[in-house]
Length: 634
Image (cartoon, rainbow, N blue to C red; front, top):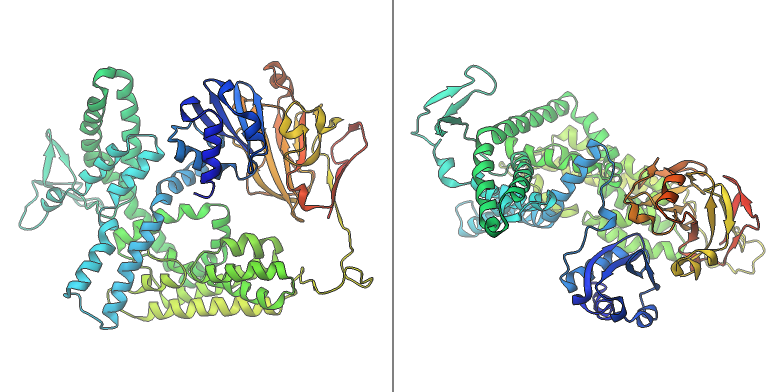
């Protein structure tokens, strides 16, 4: 826990864990509801390293931390053992169906990724050792390593039952019980020879199904749910809804055992009779569909997936492919989607290697070294967000390298047989039942081509910020001027106020950075600069933009408006978007918010203003959209 000591000190000085009724957090602060605020040591907290200030407002005791508040929040919750209220970062968003799907899949699979990669690596290396004739499949070493490699995947529904129940706010152990029922060995054995079916349903169709058992006279279509993904996620979702219904009608005195009793009695038979078969058929259809698309042209499929995989990752869209890939491995015993994108991380790493050689900027060099090392092992976020994406061209070149690498793998018929390690460790995942074959050789050639292509293309491309730090600042011939500036235009139309008039110490005393405030006359926020919308609170009341030059701008509409929980705020962009100055980002209902009793004075601050020479405010008293508001001296 990175902030363990800070978390302990905060808990102690808010009066101890027994003085805390609830805890949430917003964009910059921990929001406590204390039983007795007089027990809190406010002055001690204000002067504590890691705490910006303390604000008491709206019945909340607010400890202002800064942009890293989610990490501090996690440690405070862990150390205090709090049943924290839903974080205001996680409050309900008005999102589309696709965004909800992506959020659900990421929530279900993220907790398992580490173990999934670890067991896959063990299984992959086991296959490699057999291919290299280090031991045979009958050897005890192979058998034990195979058990470790298969332990997660063979009982996947049990693990997914836990994470899915957690995501759907159901009883975690009910989710696990549903998963365990799906892989119960005795049921799977009912279809083994010499067993004969009682009769056959849907005879002569694509979903022809022999019936071996019935439940209360209803035919049960037995399927293999080992390694399955879709049935358990749907079953757990339905189970969470059924459980919630039983909680409302079962008396508290017997809830502890009657709610799980009734839930399991309903959802497990329902899963075997309806949910499981339909979800399995859907999964097989999905696998056949992806295989058909791949079959049209493996090379074009590789070009497309290799080129855009890193873009999918940036926007979180890659989560839509993960369950399809796992489903393919479960039903087809191999997958082509993950194979085609394997080279993308190596293309990114090759580009970073070239940047490392080209740049004379010591700060950029220091970023490149760890990014290159982590990239070799498949972790490319430091490279993407710290080096290539901010400079655009290097990122585009990495996508080109990934595309060519993907095309090579498509041409060679590379497949992934297990979900294994990342980066160089992922090679073992491409070894099939027949050992080292053309597909495996294709994966090796693909990553080498992607790496070299990314490296060479970047080596012969101009690096825009390749400045020579060795030049004297007094050198009149220096290419860069000694002082540069970035202009921020007004995101609002209204009356300009100094931050000192904001009735919130975190803003009024400049603790969150230098800036200015505006009393809005229209309910609209425009982007003050070209940049990336790095933060957009689900409640819509606050947003953060990082400019191309690195200025971190926080726009906070009104005071304590987070408590409106998104009412009267209508986002027109989403977190992660690249925005242009003057683009409409948010609309809000001024009259409705004021009727609720909230101040609408809106601070616009540079949260990393300590990184700059100065932040100069406009001298205007009334300002319109797109007029100069702040000047950041770089």
